[in-house]
Length: 407
Image (cartoon, rainbow, N blue to C red; front, side, top):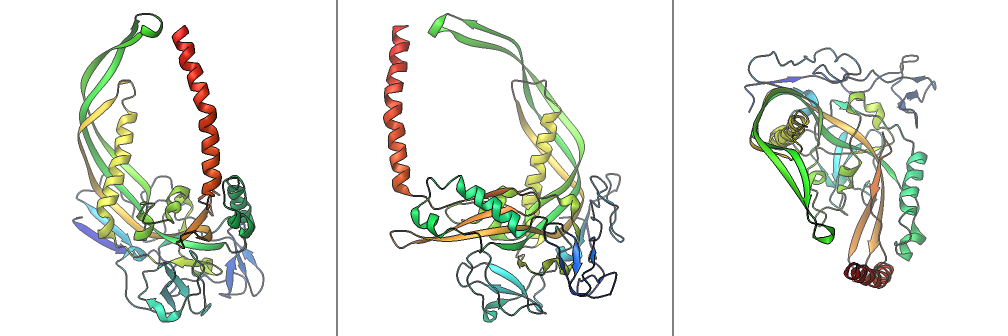
């Protein structure tokens, strides 16, 4: 636990989180598809969003950190943890922004009742009921606007599915359409930290390679020198991201079918801007259900993995491997910010022969275009192809074995 915890206000400075049109002052603003710019729905003025907030730790920043965000450095004494206002513990208060539990799949969808009183779940497309609302989470500190339009995402999803249609079942191929894809902001934490790592272990270096024997009796030998090695260094972890929704962190495919979200990372965190409610218009968003204290252990584990990779990078001459027997990474200063990252989602409900229903998803990173997902397969076709491959492979294997014996 950090010795000192501070919370700073990283919002846009407006109570409602909305920016006004610089030309006419209207707050009726939405995102211009495909550009990430803002457009005033009153006077049609198009203008740029606020500059990226960059990294408050001072590296990789696209712009200086906003006023009020301190720059953490390795020279600071003690341990300090700074939290953005949006990364504070979840507030149970409910205003115009409410969270509704989907009765179909259990997802928690954030809806701005100032904009609409009806919505559909972005996972299973079931109509949501305001009667099922629950306490809402905190407003995020930063977000990444949608850069890919719905049309661009549709083409990526169609391309992904077309490569897998050979094994897809007939019902899915007949019903597939990208008209139902939805844009959604998913909650994350972004963590910057100054750390100190200490690693001790054993490493090997191959100084001679040779063989003994001939033909099939030939064997390879390696002479290796082993050394005690150690590494002691400061490390800046910049832009570490962790899902803010506990279901999205569950990568067990038998318990969670929508963990494809983990495979479309990373996001370009360095281009994030201060939270602006205008960017949420026309999209849904998902509720953060996790506080910082719940994630501290996971963050420490992931930062230790980063440190291990850095330590290995300083010992490339040891080509026979490194075994770190003692590892320690201490976090000196850290900054936690909550964020919204954009994703395009396609979903399809498969009804299997036994009556069981299974939701399939294809997700598109709305910043980079990275696409991943699943489609329902025809088990019969999959079995036939596997049988054909086996029939072809067995004679080839026999020929290889006979050729080896005769030689």
